Length: 260
Ligand code: IPD
Ligand code: CA
Ligand code: CA
Image 1: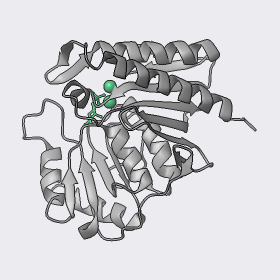
Image 2 (image 1 turned 30 degrees about the vertical axis):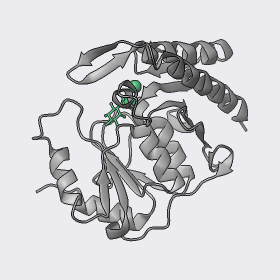
Image 3 (image 1 turned 180 degrees about the horizontal axis):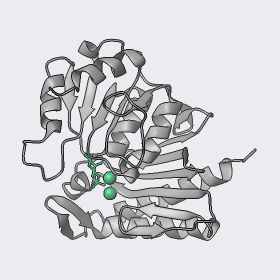
């Protein structure tokens, strides 16, 4: 049986170092647009360089996928690291303290390990498949809310959107049914918050693998639910994801997110 602790320790070291890089750059970065309203700074790129250096030094044969143009493919390796060096760049740019580093490891195409680090609160969310989820080494569990009416929800809306997107309609559909629907700007932290019970549900139709890979492992290990928005099986390569604390809220949201 594989001992995942070595992989996890490397991911944690990389996430903490990337968090240090983000804080170091927080007063001196410059901002560019990759596309309309899709921001990138030196902090994103330098944090990814730090993560890649640490993990690649330890596991030189593995494959890598990272948001900032990182794609290393080794067809002989069953391991692939999926990296978002800064999830929540818009928040970071505005010094809104809700952003994080997200690192996942896939083995044989299965999401196996997730590490998410929020350097603003020094919060480290971790999970290994089958071994539970943790916040700063303490076990975490998704909330026990049963009714959508009592649920604290978070949704993503398209970056640089026009307002005509189906996601806006879905947001408005859920809005009167839930206690609250927020848009907070970091998919990975939203998933971490579902895992530790601060949020009851989160969905998005516009995610990339690096936004969701680590968080999905952490939610599942915390006892939460993950599927596509229509209830079918989640696929990290597809942009569509719904996560929640429980089957009852998951089902209520699958229903509420249906478009005519
Ligand atoms: C974004 C955030 C946001 C989500 C976007 C992502 P970035 O990631 O996770 O919450 O709605 O789809 O692109 O660009 O800040 O790494
Ligand atoms: Ca992201
Ligand atoms: Ca990013």
